Amino acid sequence: MSADTDYFHEEYENDGALVVFRCTECGRHSLSLGSLHAHIEGHRGYTRLGIQVPFTRTAPGRFGELMARTTVLRVDTLSEMPLSEVEGL
Ligand SMILES: [Zn+2]
Image 1 (cartoon, protein in one colour):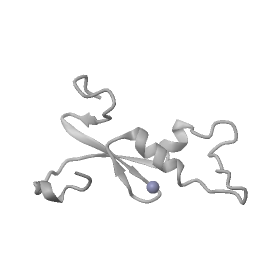
Image 2 (cartoon, protein in one colour):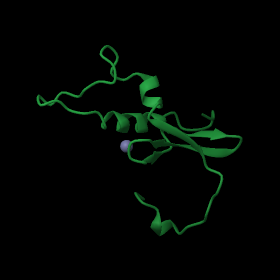
Image 3 (cartoon, helix red, strand yellow):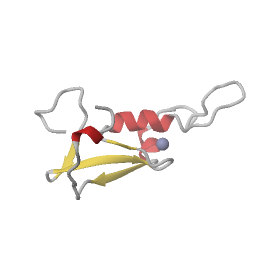
Image 4 (cartoon, helix red, strand yellow):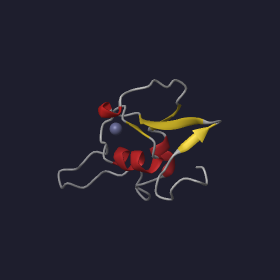
């Protein structure tokens, strides 16, 4: 993460190119590894009692288990688009 970015804004780069992360379960993309991992946690199954089944018995949020469900992508191609079509703005 570059030093000049906002503390709460998560963004990574590789040799000047943006890095994004993709959920292997559903294909969702995010600039934020933390946000994507929170999303991946939601793919866990639920028991009849409504309890999430953890990836492991002792450490439900293990980084390795989350990274196994994360694809790391470098953004090599950029295409210009109108501001009005940016979702969420
Ligand atoms: Zn997903």
